[in-house]
Length: 234
Image (cartoon, rainbow, N blue to C red; front, side, top):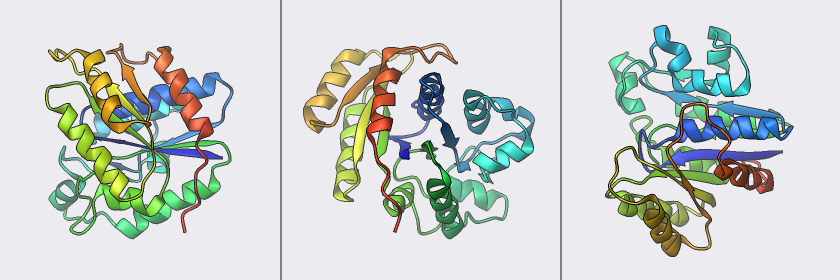
């Protein structure tokens, strides 16, 4: 069994796009794949098919139904805010222990490839005392870090890698997803990031149409996933 945790330097940089395309690519290779988005904010039940878990279900070839949504995304909040704020708007608290238990059970149960997509960036608060980083550190799965190509991404990306390294987490690859209308050349961004994070592979992902999973970067990422042996949470 292989597992990968997909995280990002921030929100709206392409985590779900990458996770869904990677799931489709692995399925085309004949791999059994499970993809989870345990925590999601900004979830509108009336637009479930367009939501992050809806996109993942489509990539897995499964219907966007309430049971399927609950199975892959049990912690859903309506407000498009950090999970702690979104939960507070509903008079709720994200149960961090329950989130860990859900994630660990999924790792244990999966017999093939498991993709777990995080929420927001690596330091987004989940509740009053835990961040995304605490979730990832508890699971200790290899990570795929998604970044944008906007002006400022160099600092954000290198800071994220430094923080992850300091927590002894393994970054299997960095994907630089092209930011729409960015004036910064994608190739230059990739080259600079690669220079500072070597030997971590840094892959360029040009802006693609939704549902496009045929770019060579996804074949490269599939190799990363297959080669990543998921350590069992202790």
